[in-house]
Image 1 (spheres, rainbow, N blue to C red):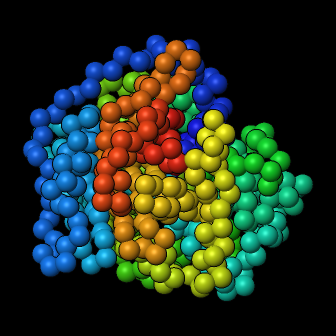
Image 2 (tube, helix red, strand yellow):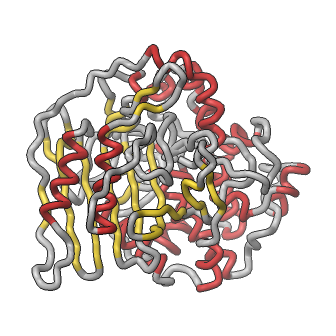
Length: 445
């Protein structure tokens, strides 16, 4: 999960909420701009061997691009790339900066708002079964959570594509962040918070715009969708998503952690820098993720994410009618008025040098993820990294381009398009292309 920037759609955890936090942080941003990056001595990128016959992936170039992300300042990074039957996995840098344990390609990882794609699929499956209608008011199902006129105006579709105008709850769940103080992150490390409380925090804030008239990224939307799944199925939404999406896709290393704060199995430590407010960066790999729930609590691997999006885009998880609805998008504009990306129902499309790609990104405290696929799922790219919000801001509160963001953009282009044109400068998260969500606030995208 992440926050999206002002008029732009980006992560990683986001939208209107980002606008609100940014207004509060402009002057103080300069005060925390001093950044001492920990220069971890790391081994060279490692790559798992792929098929030798018909190989269309330049493994050496991919390993070099991945290594460049680490050398630009990210502690550890791990990726999986696929082109038809040809696959590559690689890792660079450190999973633990204290022990110098190296990263591995198959590390399990908190994938943040990539969870939204899974939740959206589960909701659309219920649409296909006739239990939910996309243009039905959410108040028909959850009047106690979205009461009155708002419940009559906000539809299920608006929750899925972030046009509901319901505010994001993250700043309210971690209130010290509104004062540019990270103490809430530590105070709530082992807190269990109910989804209905998260909804109460978001719905209790002023509406950010009239429902259906604008776009604003809000994690509250996807917690509400989880509660919608609970209402129409009578089961915990995490169980529904696990049974109907994760298992149907054949994923082996993807799960909801529930109240369990530790990541089971091999994983990297996950370091949060909070734009210099936490210096040196602190490890948040152990965390109770009930604060993210169906909006961003999933744990997965890069390989599983590629499998999920490939099977989704191939029509294996949804009927054709519901997949078409999922890929129907709302244009999200950048500050200059250009369309930075197009947001569908829990998935977005952005342009690359070789055409549009589909997927999502995510960011929770210490863990960033980006997963993209060509429209038919033939070319795929997923990457995770374990140092987040390392970017800085100028006196006006504008993001300062970071070399790691640009390196991440080159890696993406190499993986999906076979080349690596210069990526445009960006003050956002390590998704250099203009369309990707920006990780400018401490949230979950």
